[in-house]
Length: 342
Ligand code: TXA
Ligand code: MG
Image (cartoon, rainbow, N blue to C red; front, top):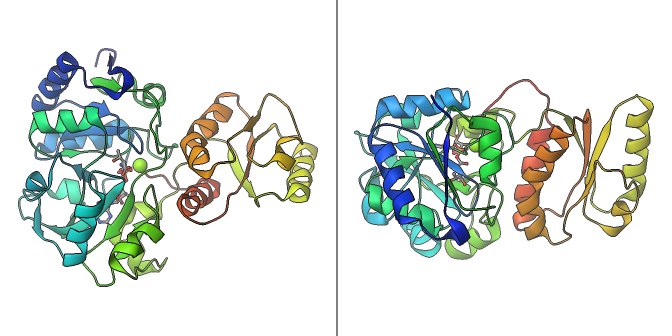
């Protein structure tokens, strides 16, 4: 494939010619990276099996990990859904478009490559003007995994997409950095209570305000229901070590220990105490606002990887609201480097 084309959509405003080109690429079975409020997605026509297969190839993604179908409206979502619970409908009408993915019973015609053979399909209406326009003009559903190489941190800018997929995909719609910075929350609404399969941009607290209790277990059964949670991901090449929020002593101890081992150490911190410890070029300081921290964390992990450190010491955050999703990603990034996902 020739070099990947990049089309600018400045200030999040759809570029009409760019959208026309992107729709053309999708109709021809090509791959288009698109911005969303969470992270950039890698789009292909959900009903075109050859195109969907290209997504797995471009990302190096295991084929047993199902994809989210992105649509412009509930009306189009019904092309994929055979049945949805009351609670599912409540969440859809309250939070779509938004950082929420619903796992629902699928229609027979949804290709099994999209659902990895499951009886369910994951659906979301993203909240981004460029991509809503793209989806509306395309008219159908686009599968949209995060537009990174499998296992790497999700892309929060077009630049990250280029780092991982240049030459492997046709087009990128560049609309600048994404607002939320973490992927959508995935919730299975086929059971009662519904089960949160992946924490993300919409907090569990906000979901429970609408529909009451949800489950979130780490049992084997749950892992079967969301194959993606099985693999290591969100991870830079360097080893990631988490230190507790505001625990200066733990941070200093770890830093010295790793340096004694001869490792090149990078750091990501957000609290004043820790920010002041080690002002080396590979010490990145993120915002103390948890929303801003979420926005910046994947970029910071990628930046430190580019500076070729062996190990990244990263300060944790409080596990409430989006903080719970941040900690989920950091924990996955710090897991043993054995398996990969997307
Ligand atoms: O924010 C997001 O969700 C981004 C943007 C681009 O929309 N997309 C994204 O897709 O993160 P991906 O493929 O990287 O993650 C999708 C997650 C995986 O953990 C996958 O296992 C799960 O959703 N998933 C997809 N279909 C499923 C299904 N039918 N049942 C259970 N889990 C499913
Ligand atoms: Mg992903």
